[in-house]
Amino acid sequence: MKKVTLIIILFFTFCGLQAQDSKSKEDHRERIKAMKVAYITQEMNMNPELAQKFWPIYNKYECQKTDLQRREHQELKEIETISEQQAEKMLMEYQEIENEEYQIKKALFADLKKIISSKEIIKLHKLESDFNKKLWKEYRERKAKERQNK
Image (cartoon, rainbow, N blue to C red):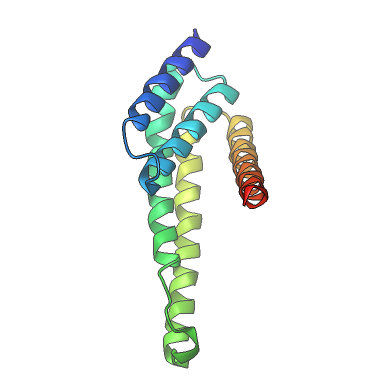
């Protein structure tokens, strides 16, 4: 039943995404997000009831984390021309972002402990890492193939 539900979710997600411009960054992000949802759902053996509780908590965390990453990676045009005072201000901002990231992860773990065990939270942490490694590996392989085809 879980696999059928997962396949249906993936089918509709990818069909909807195919209708859009496949080159857009947003489309790319959505496809990655759909793959991550499918991967975590399957690997955590989530039933529909657990998934209904889990994904709102996790998605809130992901949104907060994305907002922090945007703050941290604001474009810096002329690094050679910034003043020491501006650099100090940026360092303080980076430290604040790190602190906020710690706080949202702490809140995530506390919220997740209400619905899954600590062991499952550790498994989730490993799954996130594994998914990211797999994603980077596929990216590097695709880029290497593109270079070979040129």
